[in-house]
Image (cartoon, rainbow, N blue to C red; front, side, top):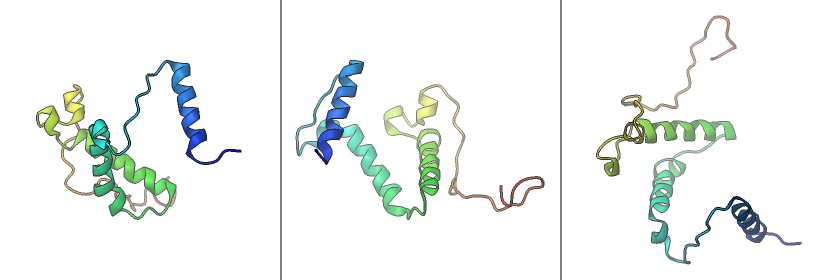
Length: 116
């Protein structure tokens, strides 16, 4: 039986072939061949993953969802002429969020559970 990355690689290759998706390899030690993804992954790691101690899968999903919302609707990008990706795509952004957007409310609401 084979363990490790080989079965995963074979499954991805099989999936791409079945769907007619072109597969291009990045040469070992040449991350600049995929500069956009490397830049995005580095920023995500530096600005979010290295700064957050996730307490559960739910917490990780909440933090990453808030980061995704901020990245696409609040933060301007130089490659889009100072617009957010949502604005660049023709969608209306949500405006500026000066504080953390992943703060959960502790306000008790009538008719709701303990905290909503």
